[in-house]
Length: 221
Image (cartoon, rainbow, N blue to C red):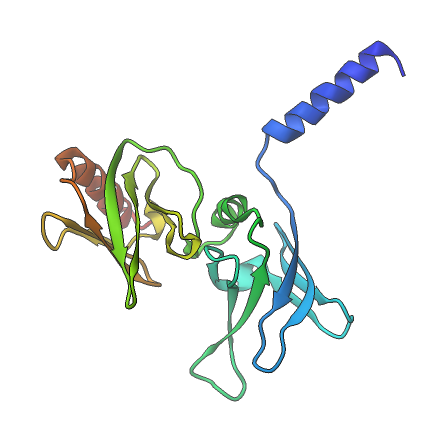
């Protein structure tokens, strides 16, 4: 191999490592079931989501356009809901839940799915930020400390607890609100999420979020 080819190969490897976002994901998972979980392999790409069990007895294939709701915030509960209803429980949608390892690339997976799925994606990935305030998210039992971030493209709640971390693109937000000076609310068609602010939210932050949410809403999102 010539020196030029060696240099070109090294450059290509560098570009792959630091260039375009990841477009394909292969995870070793367990499908969560009532009686016994089912180990297998989960594959996600631009076409959709597929799962094949290790014993070869189960194959699941969901087209990207058929995903109604996606949650990849928690590595122990990657949830993919479809538009189909359960045969014996017609009030519920058919959904598949998987457990992944704690080092699964959830940030990258959430970012990828947010660009492919036209419905809100529950998860966290980095977006630019202009304002940030320390915050706390209260749950039924306990809660988590974190940071509320507001930027040009999204509102984020950053938390060390993956299941509580969120990135809400403005296109997916239905309403925002301030019940009082130290609480901030984000509502999507999936959830209403409230954080308690540990410091005053700059007025410019709320004005930015308001203009982004409601300008998009008036233009039809």
